[in-house]
Length: 140
Image (cartoon, rainbow, N blue to C red):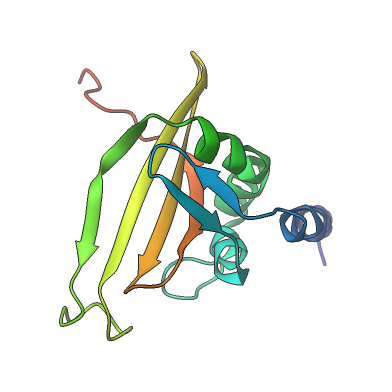
């Protein structure tokens, strides 16, 4: 096992312990409580198809995990409009409607973090993913 893998393994274990301590968090912007489950942490290290993320991507998401409750508590804007996937959509394997919300919060002029929340059918809103917000309207 290479040195880089040991470091990422330690980071995963450390962040997992921290993640397990996060309590349900109220989101004033959505007027709803956000719950935390294993799927949110799993998504930091695996993509939407269940494949292991590349180390740089996983490392970035793991480093952003401590920011998620701040984004949920302080966000006043969507990064993108809510995305709704109907239950009869061929890409939806859950047999109920999925709604994804992207909340953004600007920590400083260089760091805007985007948190993705997911609601499955009439279930609870839960944390799903974190990343740096995508740059909008970049000059070409």
